[in-house]
Every structure is written in C-alpha cells, then in structure tokens.
Amino acid sequence: VQDDSDDGDDDDGNQFNDPTIFEIEQNPSIEVVKDFAHIDNDSDGDISTGDRINYTITIENTGNNTLGVAGAPNNELVIDDTISTFAGTYTPTLVGPSYSSSSLGSPYGLIKPGEVTSFTAYVVINQDIINAGGLINTASVTVLDPSNTPATDVSDDNDDQDGNLVDDPTENPIPGNPSLNIEKTFTVSDTNGNGVNDIGDIVHYTITVSNTGNIDISSVGVTDTLAGLNSGTLDLTGP
Image (cartoon, rainbow, N blue to C red; front, side):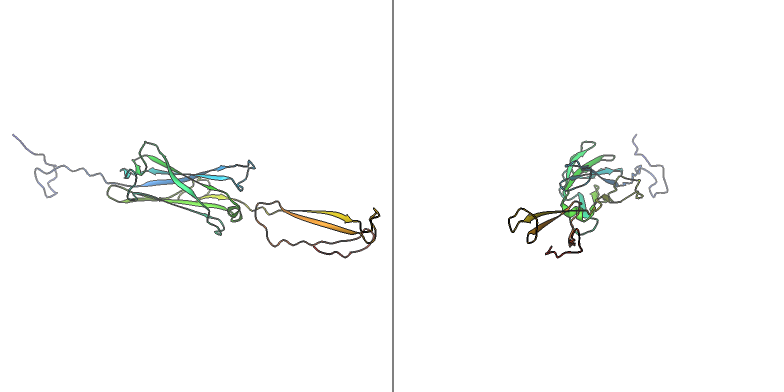
C-alpha cells in the first residue's frame, strides 16, 4: 500500500496528494556602524597636523538569509565611503576601506545571518583639513542576497548621545584657534663710531609675527607707533 501525503488544506485547489509547503520569507537587512579612533602622533591632546583618524566600518547581517558572495566578484558587496570637511572647501584623502575580519569567519564578500564583518580606513590630518573645520564621514553599504535583492544601510556613528540615533555621519570637528605672537627687537648702527647712542645713529627694528594658532591666517597688518621718552610721536620708516 502506498500513498503520498496531502497537506490537509482542501481550499488550496489541491484536494489530495499535494505537498505540504512551509514558506520562510526572506528578509535581507544590514546595520552599518562607522566608528573612529584618534591617533595623537604628537601627543598634544588635539587633532593636529600629522595625526591620524582610523575608521572602523562594521556591517551586521540583521536579516535571516546569507548575504553576498565570497570575493564579491560581481559587486555583490559595495561600500561607498564619502568623506568631506565641515566647510566643504577641501576633499581629504581616505585610504581604504579594506577588509579586516568577520565574526563567524566568512571570507570577504559573504556575511551570514548574525555575522559582523569589519573594514578599516584612515585619514592623515593635514593643514587643509584643519582650516576646513574637521572631517565628516559616511559609509553607505549595499549587499545582495541570493535572489539579488539588495540590503542597504547608511552608517551610524555609534554615538546615541548626540541626538541622532540612526544614519548620522561620523564627525571629527577641529575648532579653529586663531592666535598670533608679535616680537620686536632692535639693533643700533653707530654711524659716527663714538660708542654712544646719539644724533645721526640709526635704530633698526625687526618685527616678527608668529602664527601660534592652528589655522592659516592671511591679510596680516602691522601698525607700528614710535614715540620718544620725552616727546610725542616720532618719524618711523616702515614697516
């Protein structure tokens, strides 16, 4: 005696010997976070020229099916990493992102359900970045599932205390700190050779202006007022 099973549902158009179907809806989804670490190469406590910002991009498969393909030969995994400055006057050089590791051991391009894959990138700080107020960085990731359905997410900065809970850029602000130091020195040309500062001698002044802040300064003007100890304003040649 032989019989094939029925699914017990006679309202589906098949009254006997029809397979029992249990569908699992695929739900491809990812969560992307971009965090950073400041490498303070000059140990001054600030983000300054020559320092490095290291970025870590994590992609978590929050869906129920495997995403991507090992090696991503046909762009099954794409990371669009956009970096700019607060002023928008300069485009920094971003090195990476480069594949780092996967929490379940999958190769590059493949992310299993519940797995977190990591990528790294970095920027070396230069004066143009400081002049432009610091860095703004966002990563957008798209991964295809086996049916070529995309899972896409824009990175969060991993800081939920900043008022933005999702899809907010990773920021490294560098406040401008304009500051000058002025030094004035002098030498005397003893024109008559008598070893005394007297009539006919020439006093040469040197004014040195130093930029002691962290941003470029232009259009520097120097106003020099010369006065005698026992009289009013005197004539000055220059600056």
